[in-house]
Length: 284
Ligand code: FAD
Picture (tube, rainbow, N blue to C red):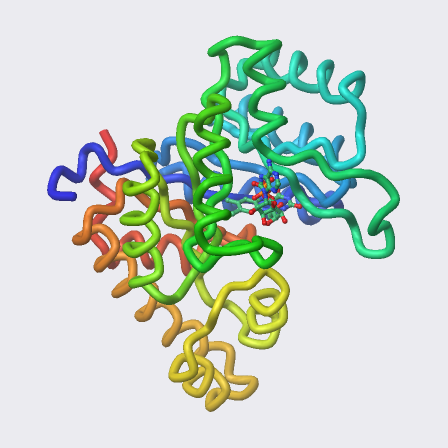
């Protein structure tokens, strides 16, 4: 990617539960808005557990004049619950949705059937035509439940065939996995953009636990380096920020169409990485 004007930048938040969390997020969104990202996305708790909080956060971002994209899954809910929610989003001016299958909250496994993301995409297209730009999830290191590499790529293709516009990846620390995945998607006939998801490193223990669960590999040399810092979070974050700056640089040099940051509701390291990359002035 040589023309920085065309780079897409987006920032992901999770919906805060408390008043303190809300006012902290407001400060973060104010800082990150200065970078002029294309949109902020807001996650949706497993099984729909944050339905109202996600909606409130999206509406609050929109009320601040920012573009917001709610994440959404059926999560055990029926069409009668999801349809009015989508209508409410449309009425509030939302024009982008991150459409997911999601997971069941722990302890509820098997309680009801998860609806695959391609079915949610088709459902939204059926009821709202082309109103929403639909993002879906992609997995350069392959979704943990996928039967095979090729199956996962084909199911991603199924999401595009159902009407999705673009994909955002699960985070990864192996850049080769992303570029190989793009090649395989290309071979499978996928022509839509696939934006890399970037997870800045804040806390090694949390990251290691989460990565095991979602199937993201932390290469041994990175684990070893992070372990060596122990509880010294300042050093963990300094190392992580340099690492992610280099990784984003390689991704953009290699043709990634933009970057999606999992901000964890904090301004740094996301802002520092963007400053290091010289992208803060790239958005018109
Ligand atoms: P799908 O695309 O439906 O795929 C799920 C699994 O089923 C895969 O193994 C796939 O190979 C297989 N599959 C897909 N389609 C079919 C089909 N038609 N028939 C048979 N098998 C199929 N989780 C949350 O709880 N809240 C969030 O807000 C959230 N945001 C996310 C944002 C991004 C960018 C990413 C990458 C992930 C996010 N997740 C979120 C995690 C996500 O919900 C989980 O990874 C979930 O397990 C899969 O969701 P999906 O939409 O990728 O599912």
